[in-house]
Structures are given as C-alpha cells and as structure tokens.
Image (cartoon, rainbow, N blue to C red; front, side, top):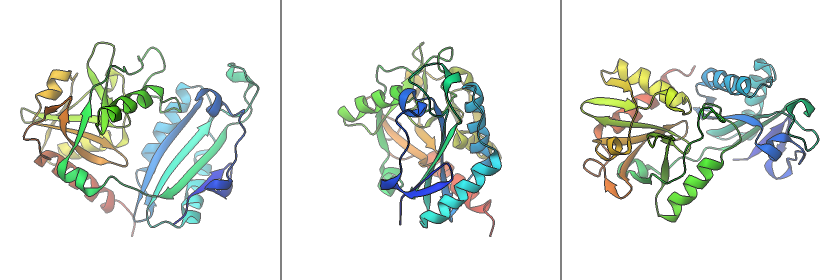
Length: 288
C-alpha cells in the first residue's frame, strides 16, 4: 500500500510532494476539489464527481484542465498507488501568484491528485450508530460563499467538528441562518419519519452530494417515498431514523443528536437498506 500525490502530471511519494506556498489554494482556500473512492479498484461515479467539480469551478470563475486530462491523471495515479481500494482527492487550485486577492493575478491552475489506501469507518459504527451535535456554528449563507461550491475553504466545518469532538460526539450537523438543519460537516443529512425519507432541498444552502443524489434515485426505485423539505432541529430529534451520507461513509446511522436518543437508539432498517442498495449499485455498475 502506498500514498502518492500527482502534481501537474508528475507523481511523487507523499512525503516528497511539494507545491509553492504562493499557491492560492494554500493562501486563500481558492480551490475546488472532489473526493472519489474506488470499488474493485475502479473510481466510482467519476462522471458525477467531475460534473460537480466543473460546477464548483464555474462558481469560482476559473477554468479547469481538460476533463480527459483529469480522467487520465487520476487513473495513472491510482495505478501508481497500487492499493487494493483507494481514497482519491482531486484538487484544482486557481494557481500561484503574488500575495494579492485579485484572482486575475494567478497563473495557470494547479492540479493535485492524492491517492492513498482507502480507510473506511469501522463496521461497528454501522452496527451501533454514531452520535452528533448541533453546534452554534452556522453554514455559510448562499449569498456569501455558496455551500454548493466544494472548495478548499472548510473553516465552518473545522469549527463544527472541533465542537463535536470536545463534547465526545462523532460529528456535527450544520444549521442555516434560520436555524434549520442543512447537512453534516462533510456529509448530507437524511431523516426517516412518517413513512418518508426526507432530506433538505439544495435551495436551503448545502452541497449537492453525489451519494445524496444517488440515494434519492435508488430509494425511489426501491419503493421508498422521498421528499426534499426544510428540516428543523425538532424534526431531527423526533425522527425514527437519522443518517449521514457521503462518498466514504455511504450511509451511516445516527443514534443520538444533542444527547437525545433517535428512535430506538439502534441502527434502523431504513439506514441498513439504503447502505445495501448503494453498495449493490456501486458494485453492479463497474465493468468486469
């Protein structure tokens, strides 16, 4: 197993990779990224991730390298890593330049691809569930830096995770300026109540998760009623099931929010079903 990093087409062992400290991703978080995982050694939902990467870059008004280059460099880096399954982080920064907020002073974008052995949450977390809190940290307002941009600026989530860990919780749920719950720090939120699977709408100001979108599609195909609706903290507290979704976590059950037990306090049947159908779909769509 190895950890390798591709910088503009040149692949290094992680400990030897270097990028200028004048890169705007380092100076200002002026970058976009995607996290992609492999199943059977192949990147899953790659086109959906590249589509979102493109949308993020458009919102920040910079141009990505050609898509074919991104695909090829990602594949080269996965092969060089030689891991059974890989965690891949594809980052594009606006580039290097003077210490100047003006984006026009940046040179060409930098492409950085991190590939290391995939490390997933322990199976016990899926069996027992996790605890989360709703801290005072609020998600960035859509009229500021829109949460739909998957950028290198993650300070809100950093502060929220810090608050969660200080209280002994696994993660935190983010709220908007109205106090409604939008998503996790690096995941989307689903609740199950009244026979319906619910998730906040994108208009509430949240990341359009690749796994979120897939869950909505697969849940409908498997006979689960779904709805995108504004969700309050009280809705979360009173839900039969609460779960977090992301590329790495798939579907992770939440058994306690702010010290309040969710449902039976155990991983529920809907979370188990959704995780199974997401994984089955991922494995079934890969070429032989």
